[in-house]
Amino acid sequence: LEQDFAFMHQAWHAWDSGPMGRVNRLLASGEPFASPPSILPLVRRSRELAQRSDNLFNPAVGHLVDLWGFHTDSPECRPPPDSRDIEALVRAKPSMSDVQIDGLMLRSTNPSVKLDFGAIGKGYGIDLAIGHLRELGIRNAIINAGGDLRAIGDRGGRPWRIAVRSPSGGVLAVLEVAGDESVFTSGDYERNFIYEGRTYHHIIDPRTGRPAEGSRSVTVVHSDATTADAAATALFVAGPEHWHQTADALGVRYVLLVDADGVVHMNPEMAKRVELLRKDPQVVISPPLGAGPPREG
Image: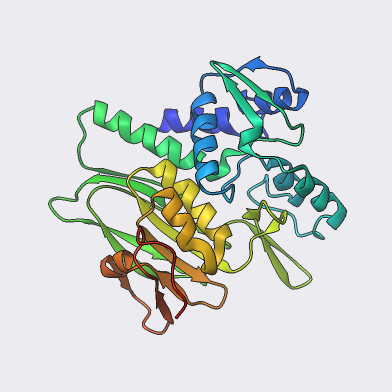
């Protein structure tokens, strides 16, 4: 598995000279080309999930990631990009629907497209790794990649107990997982920089070209890690007012969102299975997922 993850990191890194870097150079040309086998499945899944999330999950905005300096693990503390540069990329509207697939061939109809699979690659890699373990006959396991994970089976007959990080530090809650489930979190604390007292995080809202506002973290549970990874980002961008609709569209049935004021938002199904370790936060329980949009009051 360690060898597999090392290969995937090299193949899918948008800013290295490997297959992903080559794909982005060729997409910018507008000409069709044969996709590397390691890239095509990610493009297909990304197109599907981007469409279902109304492009709140949008891996085609790699140039915006470049512009903000979030292509590195430790972004520099510097002034935000010029508003004119941000607005030019937003007007170009790069999206996964601009990437055309014809058999093994790829082509972009929008020169502003640059693919960055940072919000789906980890989940897809974990799904591949779980498939590998199952081929080896392993039925009980947990694969944790930087706090995001997929668990199969159980822990000696007991559920796996998963900690949910608090955006302000420490553990916010504990979640029990058994059978086959993935738990993914997107948070504003993962990669950011501070300039003149303001924090700028790496989760870009494709509609504004700027760090998404309203959320501090989103934790989702889903059967596969690929969907969970993309959904955590999409729901973070959707924010506390619109996460419910986006979760429904992506088929997510367990959500915990912490908004900018520290209020915890959950659907009833998640509330039943999560144990909040802090007793002080305000909690808002939404209508059930799959039952239509939330109602006021």
